[in-house]
Structure formats: C-alpha cells, structure tokens
Image 1 (cartoon, helix red, strand yellow):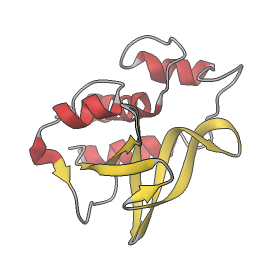
Image 2 (cartoon, helix red, strand yellow):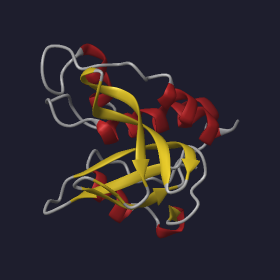
Image 3 (cartoon, rainbow, N blue to C red):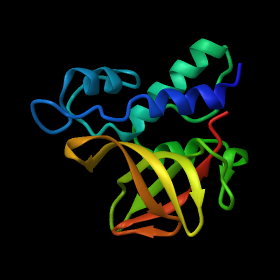
Image 4 (cartoon, rainbow, N blue to C red):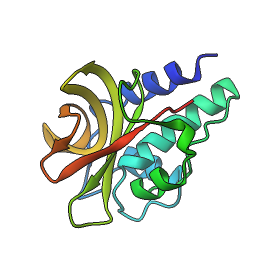
Length: 155
C-alpha cells in the first residue's frame, strides 16, 4: 500500500505514449484528459499527474491532498502548503513550473535527483517525434522560459 511508489510507477509506465492525429490528441491522451475534465484538446501535463494520482488512490484507498485541476498554477496555489517542498524533494515528487510572462505552467515528476539537475518524467512534452510522455533532464531553477515553483509530495 505504498501510494507514492504506485503513483510513480504508474507515471513511468506511460513513457512512450505520444499524441496521435494532431496537437493534444490521440486515444490515450484523450483518456488522460478525461480524468480531470473533458477531452477538448487542452494541454495534458497536469492531467497525466492527476490520472496517476487517481490510479494510486483507487488501488491503495489512500487519498492525495493535491488539488484536483488541470491547471498547474491552480494546483500549486490550492494544494496545502504542508505538501510543498523547495529543497531536496524525494523520488516521485510532483514538480510544478511557472512560465515567464504567463499564467501557464508545466508539470511532471522527479525520478532522479542529481543536483543541480534532475531527471523527470513529463506528459505533453517534446521528445522523439510528437509530444508525449518522456524522460527529461531538467535543472532545479530554470529551464528556458520555465522556472521551478516547487515540488509537491503526492502522498
């Protein structure tokens, strides 16, 4: 009944899923989007996190306190501050990024901490071919126009 481990393994099992038929489209992508709303071709990085949280919750009967939304900044702002981690996040922590000059953001999960960088798994991100779920090497402070808001403990 390790909800955090199950959450992370579920997320990693999605690596290789790609958009099919256009931006934010595809059978699996649309199922992920439906976890937290409807599939209306919206960005799906946070929907991937929410889908894996829902799976772990169902299997372990342990509820995550992460706020249910598709919008990264809404999740960050409405998740209890007690779940926020600024330094030394553990494996499978949810990373939340803000985007310069925007209310948009991005998310994924930390899979390996190699300060000053880390490896993550992210949905709705560029990689090999169409956008999909991929491993990415990221830095703890800034990645292009993305800056780390912080990390959330999923359980």
